Image 1 (cartoon, rainbow, N blue to C red):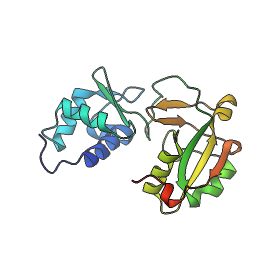
Image 2 (cartoon, rainbow, N blue to C red):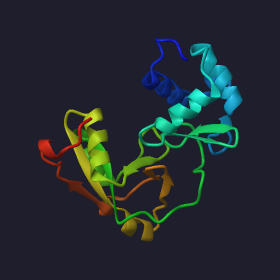
Image 3 (cartoon, rainbow, N blue to C red):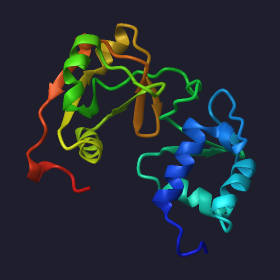
Length: 192
Protein backbone atom coordinates (compact mmCIF):
# COMPACT_ATOMS: atom_id res chain seq x y z
CA UNK A 1 0.00 0.00 0.00
CA UNK A 2 1.26 3.48 -0.82
CA UNK A 3 1.52 6.18 1.86
CA UNK A 4 -1.63 8.22 2.42
CA UNK A 5 0.05 11.25 0.79
CA UNK A 6 0.01 9.43 -2.52
CA UNK A 7 -2.20 10.97 -5.17
CA UNK A 8 -2.72 9.11 -8.44
CA UNK A 9 -3.34 12.43 -10.18
CA UNK A 10 -0.13 13.95 -8.82
CA UNK A 11 1.87 10.83 -9.70
CA UNK A 12 0.57 10.66 -13.28
CA UNK A 13 1.26 14.38 -13.75
CA UNK A 14 4.83 13.81 -12.61
CA UNK A 15 5.03 10.71 -14.82
CA UNK A 16 3.82 12.72 -17.82
CA UNK A 17 6.43 15.39 -17.16
CA UNK A 18 9.22 12.83 -16.80
CA UNK A 19 8.27 10.85 -19.92
CA UNK A 20 6.92 13.59 -22.21
CA UNK A 21 9.02 16.64 -21.48
CA UNK A 22 12.18 16.09 -19.43
CA UNK A 23 13.40 12.49 -19.17
CA UNK A 24 17.03 13.68 -19.10
CA UNK A 25 16.39 15.43 -15.78
CA UNK A 26 15.80 12.01 -14.25
CA UNK A 27 18.54 10.18 -16.14
CA UNK A 28 16.05 8.40 -18.40
CA UNK A 29 16.99 7.73 -22.02
CA UNK A 30 13.91 7.09 -24.14
CA UNK A 31 14.20 5.20 -27.40
CA UNK A 32 12.96 6.82 -30.62
CA UNK A 33 9.33 5.99 -29.72
CA UNK A 34 9.60 7.35 -26.17
CA UNK A 35 9.92 4.03 -24.33
CA UNK A 36 12.13 3.71 -21.25
CA UNK A 37 12.97 0.60 -19.27
CA UNK A 38 10.23 0.10 -16.66
CA UNK A 39 12.72 -0.95 -13.96
CA UNK A 40 14.76 2.23 -14.54
CA UNK A 41 11.56 4.27 -14.43
CA UNK A 42 10.48 2.61 -11.17
CA UNK A 43 13.89 3.31 -9.62
CA UNK A 44 13.40 7.01 -10.42
CA UNK A 45 9.74 6.99 -9.33
CA UNK A 46 10.66 5.45 -5.97
CA UNK A 47 12.73 8.51 -5.11
CA UNK A 48 9.40 10.35 -4.81
CA UNK A 49 7.10 7.41 -4.10
CA UNK A 50 9.22 4.85 -2.18
CA UNK A 51 6.57 2.14 -2.00
CA UNK A 52 5.64 2.16 -5.71
CA UNK A 53 5.54 -1.40 -7.08
CA UNK A 54 5.40 -2.67 -10.67
CA UNK A 55 1.82 -3.83 -10.04
CA UNK A 56 0.75 -0.40 -8.74
CA UNK A 57 2.31 1.26 -11.79
CA UNK A 58 0.49 -1.20 -14.08
CA UNK A 59 -2.79 -0.46 -12.27
CA UNK A 60 -2.34 3.33 -12.56
CA UNK A 61 -1.72 2.97 -16.29
CA UNK A 62 -4.73 0.66 -16.76
CA UNK A 63 -7.02 2.94 -14.76
CA UNK A 64 -6.06 6.03 -16.77
CA UNK A 65 -8.98 7.73 -18.46
CA UNK A 66 -7.59 8.28 -21.97
CA UNK A 67 -4.69 5.86 -22.26
CA UNK A 68 -1.91 8.41 -21.73
CA UNK A 69 0.67 5.73 -20.90
CA UNK A 70 1.61 2.31 -22.20
CA UNK A 71 3.47 -0.64 -20.69
CA UNK A 72 4.89 -3.12 -23.18
CA UNK A 73 7.57 -5.79 -22.89
CA UNK A 74 9.31 -4.28 -19.86
CA UNK A 75 9.12 -0.73 -21.18
CA UNK A 76 6.88 2.23 -20.38
CA UNK A 77 6.09 5.38 -22.34
CA UNK A 78 3.73 8.30 -22.64
CA UNK A 79 1.62 7.68 -25.74
CA UNK A 80 1.23 11.33 -26.74
CA UNK A 81 1.83 14.91 -25.61
CA UNK A 82 5.60 14.99 -26.02
CA UNK A 83 7.62 18.16 -26.32
CA UNK A 84 10.75 16.03 -26.82
CA UNK A 85 11.35 14.45 -30.21
CA UNK A 86 9.77 10.99 -30.53
CA UNK A 87 8.50 9.07 -33.52
CA UNK A 88 4.96 7.68 -33.54
CA UNK A 89 4.98 4.07 -32.35
CA UNK A 90 2.95 2.83 -35.30
CA UNK A 91 2.21 3.59 -38.92
CA UNK A 92 -0.27 6.26 -40.02
CA UNK A 93 -3.92 5.21 -39.79
CA UNK A 94 -7.05 6.16 -41.67
CA UNK A 95 -8.99 8.40 -39.28
CA UNK A 96 -12.75 8.58 -38.93
CA UNK A 97 -14.61 11.13 -41.01
CA UNK A 98 -14.57 13.70 -38.18
CA UNK A 99 -12.34 14.43 -35.22
CA UNK A 100 -12.50 17.24 -32.66
CA UNK A 101 -9.97 19.57 -31.07
CA UNK A 102 -10.47 21.78 -28.01
CA UNK A 103 -8.89 25.21 -27.96
CA UNK A 104 -9.21 28.66 -26.41
CA UNK A 105 -11.33 31.39 -27.97
CA UNK A 106 -8.26 33.63 -28.26
CA UNK A 107 -6.65 31.19 -30.73
CA UNK A 108 -9.56 30.75 -33.14
CA UNK A 109 -8.62 33.53 -35.58
CA UNK A 110 -5.06 32.22 -35.94
CA UNK A 111 -6.28 28.64 -36.34
CA UNK A 112 -8.64 29.51 -39.16
CA UNK A 113 -5.93 31.60 -40.85
CA UNK A 114 -2.98 29.21 -40.51
CA UNK A 115 -4.43 25.82 -39.59
CA UNK A 116 -4.09 23.76 -36.44
CA UNK A 117 -0.53 23.37 -35.13
CA UNK A 118 0.68 21.58 -32.02
CA UNK A 119 2.32 24.67 -30.50
CA UNK A 120 4.94 23.51 -27.94
CA UNK A 121 4.13 19.82 -28.42
CA UNK A 122 5.14 17.54 -31.28
CA UNK A 123 1.63 16.54 -32.40
CA UNK A 124 -1.95 17.79 -32.22
CA UNK A 125 -4.32 15.86 -29.95
CA UNK A 126 -7.69 15.07 -31.50
CA UNK A 127 -10.74 13.38 -29.99
CA UNK A 128 -13.02 11.00 -31.83
CA UNK A 129 -16.02 12.05 -29.74
CA UNK A 130 -17.45 15.50 -29.26
CA UNK A 131 -18.06 14.66 -25.58
CA UNK A 132 -14.35 13.94 -25.02
CA UNK A 133 -13.37 17.21 -26.72
CA UNK A 134 -15.87 19.17 -24.63
CA UNK A 135 -14.51 17.58 -21.43
CA UNK A 136 -10.96 18.61 -22.42
CA UNK A 137 -12.13 22.11 -23.34
CA UNK A 138 -13.89 22.62 -20.03
CA UNK A 139 -10.78 21.59 -18.08
CA UNK A 140 -8.53 23.99 -19.96
CA UNK A 141 -10.48 27.15 -20.60
CA UNK A 142 -13.32 29.26 -19.28
CA UNK A 143 -14.13 30.16 -22.92
CA UNK A 144 -13.57 26.92 -24.82
CA UNK A 145 -14.03 26.44 -28.53
CA UNK A 146 -14.37 23.10 -30.29
CA UNK A 147 -12.89 22.73 -33.76
CA UNK A 148 -14.33 19.98 -35.96
CA UNK A 149 -11.72 18.45 -38.26
CA UNK A 150 -12.70 16.85 -41.55
CA UNK A 151 -10.13 14.19 -40.77
CA UNK A 152 -10.82 11.68 -43.52
CA UNK A 153 -10.64 14.40 -46.18
CA UNK A 154 -7.44 15.76 -44.62
CA UNK A 155 -5.95 12.25 -44.60
CA UNK A 156 -6.81 11.76 -48.27
CA UNK A 157 -5.12 15.11 -48.98
CA UNK A 158 -1.89 13.87 -47.36
CA UNK A 159 -2.14 14.69 -43.63
CA UNK A 160 -0.74 11.78 -41.59
CA UNK A 161 -2.84 10.66 -38.62
CA UNK A 162 -1.73 8.32 -35.84
CA UNK A 163 -3.75 6.69 -33.10
CA UNK A 164 -2.65 6.28 -29.50
CA UNK A 165 -5.42 4.79 -27.38
CA UNK A 166 -8.48 7.02 -27.67
CA UNK A 167 -6.48 9.96 -29.01
CA UNK A 168 -5.62 10.69 -32.64
CA UNK A 169 -2.46 12.63 -33.43
CA UNK A 170 -1.47 14.75 -36.42
CA UNK A 171 1.45 17.13 -37.05
CA UNK A 172 -0.59 19.96 -38.64
CA UNK A 173 -4.03 20.36 -40.18
CA UNK A 174 -4.64 23.03 -42.84
CA UNK A 175 -7.50 25.44 -42.20
CA UNK A 176 -9.45 24.11 -45.21
CA UNK A 177 -10.37 21.06 -43.10
CA UNK A 178 -11.47 22.96 -39.98
CA UNK A 179 -14.91 24.11 -38.82
CA UNK A 180 -16.13 25.64 -35.59
CA UNK A 181 -18.38 23.20 -33.73
CA UNK A 182 -21.09 24.67 -31.49
CA UNK A 183 -20.73 23.71 -27.84
CA UNK A 184 -23.60 21.57 -26.58
CA UNK A 185 -26.03 23.26 -24.20
CA UNK A 186 -24.84 23.16 -20.56
CA UNK A 187 -27.32 20.41 -19.69
CA UNK A 188 -25.98 18.29 -22.58
CA UNK A 189 -22.32 18.40 -21.55
CA UNK A 190 -20.69 15.52 -19.71
CA UNK A 191 -20.03 15.89 -16.01
CA UNK A 192 -16.38 16.34 -15.24
